[in-house]
Length: 102
Image 1: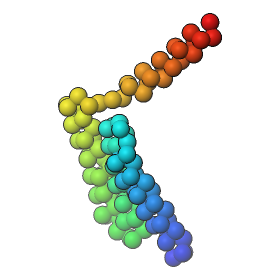
Image 2: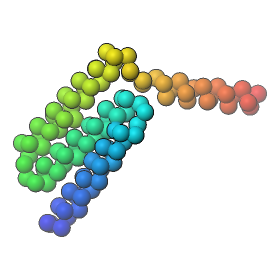
Image 3: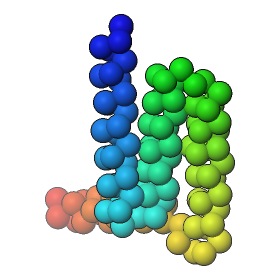
Image 4: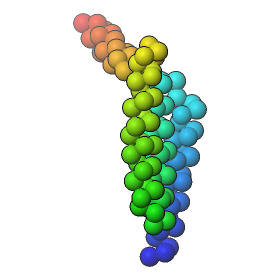
């Protein structure tokens, strides 16, 4: 059982590192906020595996929930909210394909 716990912790660390790199690389601020949530969720998993469920619950609630909501609201307040940009690009590509097929 100890061996499985080590693998789960290793997987959580890899997910956290990938999320941290994604925060640095992503151009979309909202996606970067989601990546910070992934990092906090990975930390919560590690705390559960270290048998600290109270700390894990706090990390999940504050790190993943409250912080993400506050950052997303700050992005909206600053006018950096870019939810529809990807949808607009997808619809523009679909329109261009429709024009090409006619």
